Amino acid sequence: MISTSQKEHLTYTLILQVSILAGIAILSWSYILPGITKIGVNQVAAQAAIDEYNETKENGLSFDTLGQKLTTMKGKEELIKIVRSAPAETRTVIKKTTK
Image (cartoon, rainbow, N blue to C red):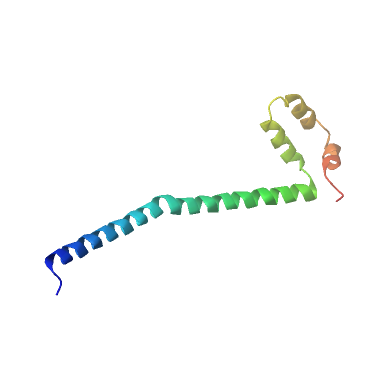
């Protein structure tokens, strides 16, 4: 037969184990699961960057993309004006045609 002190000891051990499991569950809910979703978002962004790189490698920069990239850079205002004022034939010259 189990004595009263043994019952108390088992009860306190159970309470401690349950509280530890609850703490682990709270930590995993607040730190691990958001980290996994962040990894998923980063993986999608990385795949998009890889696809954009492969597209640029195969076909070169499109005329519109070139203008967008130049507008994000500082000190390129004069080059942007030159590119925008270029005739339509320039668009075909800029396009990559060989591998």
